[in-house]
Length: 351
Image 1 (cartoon, one colour):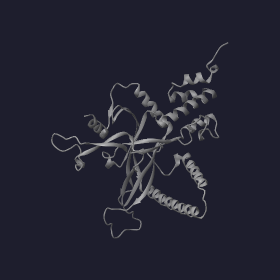
Image 2: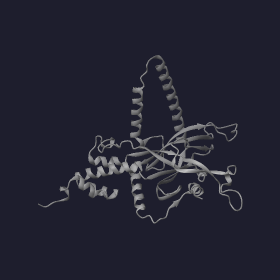
Image 3: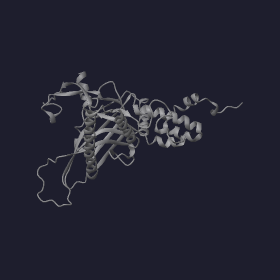
Image 4: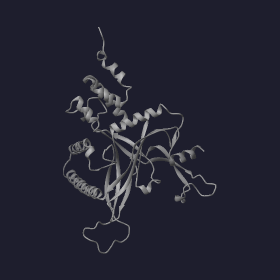
């Protein structure tokens, strides 16, 4: 009796298909409904691995151009991938109310969320003196030591906040976002492989900043009213907060399902592969007294704080970056890349 590949059990077919790269799997998927289902299962598993990063780390640089050389790298801790169940294949919004073919189109709508964290510090070391006198950082001559950074974040203990100032004639400000997927080496600041996920300079428009700052003020008022209502209800009766907590979780879940159209995300470009979930707040302008006479239609100088809450990455975009990193690791020739202050601190600890 002649045998074909379709007569093989699913377990063997998965073993055959598993080594193929993502783009090859997508080209094979239309072969048959069975292949589509198996490849979807493989991609589900790869998406979970890519989102959780495993042995890789996602590092972020986010700064105004004038702070390019002073802002540290941010380590990104994985939070979740809304719509993709981490427990079982076949669960999550990816599988809801759609056919196998429709699930492939939904793959590209998934986003993974990460919390940016400043590098952890485990101590300080004296700055290395130069032969001509002084230290390596004349910009901060008041300090005779420099921190020893770890290869992990600080757990989100510090806010990631930036200030954007706009003069009256400025319609936008620039903001840089660089995300890299790295493999940590044997020493601090040494990366065995680096794959760029995003490297863009964005325009942050005055109109958008005003709109998001207004939304933040309204949200603060709403939260304040809810807090007062809860406190009053708690004092009056045995108030059960379970129902309200459930409603908040459901509201958060619904918002997460539509990350791609969230107005609170600052996207790096129109492709919306990488974005920053931010909170915008007004600040008092401190550039001195303004003009005495101002036209009614003339913009005023403005200042805003941008707090970065999360880094949002399209999961398929991240999966391709992980695949590229794995390809780099197979071709490692003993060379490593060394990055900035991490390397200097590492040298000091091993000297």
